[in-house]
Image (cartoon, rainbow, N blue to C red; front, side, top):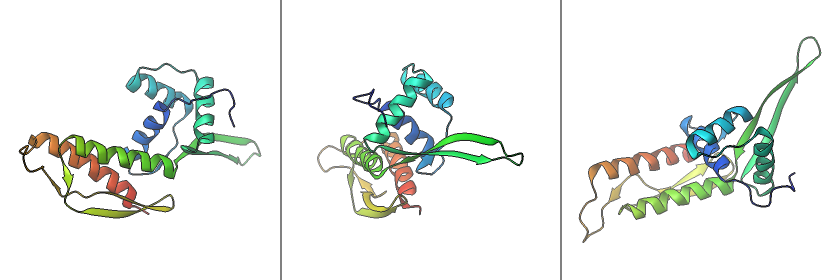
Length: 163
């Protein structure tokens, strides 16, 4: 594990979450070069591969991700190295599901009903349903805002609902 980093850079988890959910999975396997390039592009944070490795070790230590190093023997007996597989842990999934719920409430959307979904990484997590209503006195939020919120919640529900 990593003792160099006291507080790991959470932007790596956000980037891994974006990669995983864009493919409807709870895992991703980008190379460290790709991961650092994505963090630079979307978060404006420049990381060396070594710094990213230290932060990923600290994120694994703090139970945000689980890493599986992938390798196998080639036909000639040499070792083939492949990119590391990053699993999002239950802690990360709950964090992002809670964030989606809080975002829905901040946009003025409240759940009509709550739906429970079985998490692929070993637990049941309840998230907002796709039936959203506007609060009584404030009037309905703009349609585009409701559509964006519904799409975000549907994506999270789809990922959490898969086995």
